Length: 287
Image (tube, rainbow, N blue to C red; front, side, top):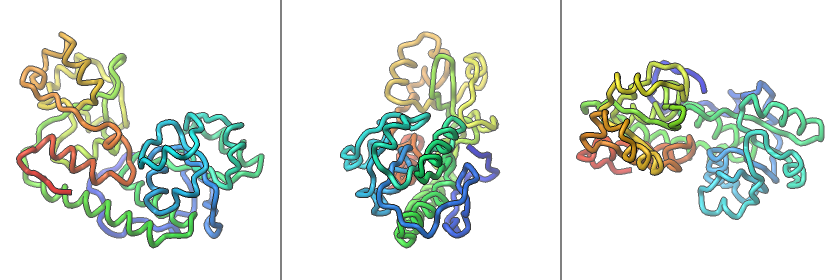
């Protein structure tokens, strides 16, 4: 994830494929070739490929790629981080799209040695969504459809941002792991979504996507609202420790859709609408 100084999503001038000549491992993008057998090893990438009309080219995905429903018809190749190389090769792809973590660099190198093209993207910021979508559009030969998808998502994000511009902003905590305690930090796209939706992440000053914090520090910051997944809600409400927070005492433990909000794909706009509805139910923001 990359730090940004402005959480506002761009509404125009999103990067085009010809301005993004390299992937996030620094390798040249194979623009000019059109790929027909694609393995996508990151949920947001799979969502984008379906949205730009290339879902029928997918011959592999991770076990976490569950949207759209038709993605479930694509063979499940397991993990997206340090994936099973033999399973990738057996799928006979002409392109593998990886998540650009350091753990996946050996995979990219191994694929190159066996003659399989790979690209890697780190889709952790809203700004990255436009860049990656346009790059994938170039790789499948349809940048016009990719541009349409980008413009639609960015327009929805801007709609939500404008709708929440003048609201009072509650402070928000988003735990993502509980033992040890990790939270959403300032360089995550989820932090951006909270801001667009009219909230303020109490850990927005931490320049990490999901920093580890102490519970004592959480108590000191005492957020107005806890945004949690379904499992997190059960854990928080069932723990005496968490009851010291005003948000828990006041019934402001709000459950968000983790599959919708936790992925920086084509549903970023819907995620912003959903979070705004939780933080500001009186606004009734339409998608």
